[in-house]
Image 1 (spheres, rainbow, N blue to C red):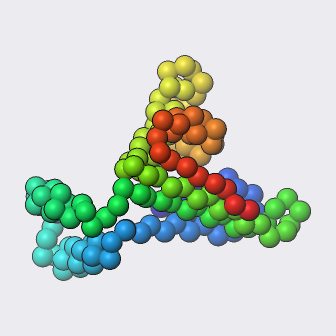
Image 2 (image 1 turned 60 degrees about the horizontal axis):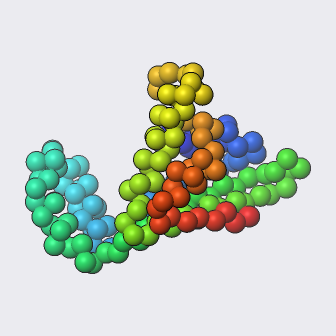
Length: 150
């Protein structure tokens, strides 16, 4: 994951970066574990061919989940004075607005490119190209909230 390499360079004093993801329901964990095992055992080589079945199943099981999602980003390291520092960003998306979150930075960057505010072209790390304030403005119509805890 490129973020594991990029974040320590961006945040001076950051020594450790970890990313964790989770699924809401216990059966989703078992299903993905099983799919991974079947792929490694070469029983299934292309899960895409099962898309219609997965779509049907997801519609039947949607009531077992919720419309709330969350994310936590934790950065730990030393501040400018060499003191230990921990900062955590908690984000909560309600009303099934979680899928809007990864779209927001792309929209912000596209508008900046159109206005000529970003001149770089090609594949590159996007760290530092948008601000939390810009993200907040883009998400203002959605049921998404967050807080930063130090």
